[in-house]
Image 1 (cartoon, rainbow, N blue to C red):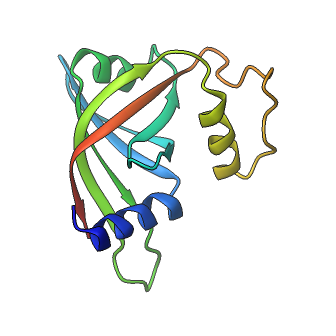
Image 2 (spheres, rainbow, N blue to C red):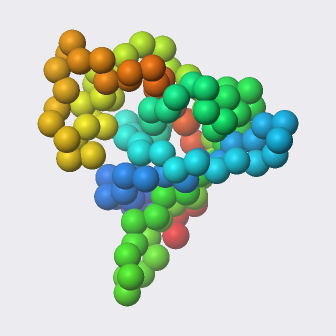
Length: 132
């Protein structure tokens, strides 16, 4: 990936906080908005209830797609569309929780806090990203 394109994608990931995630199950395509964080490899993580439709669909059919847009009224378009494979991440992942809380402008959680409260972490490893 060209370095300047990677930087533009990283800029969108850092400026945004809401991802529209599309997954497919036996009932068809389903889209859910989730708050995300990312890592240096541009993998995208989100926290969701494992019993909701988009979580079940992402596990059953790991191929998912999404979009993140950070442009506002009167601004040029700035966002990304992507596809890739999703999977459930085991464990509480306090490192992700800290990033997630900061992104939501909440106080950083303590290591002992149960931030998941029944939810699970998921990761999307993009295989294709289009910047717009």
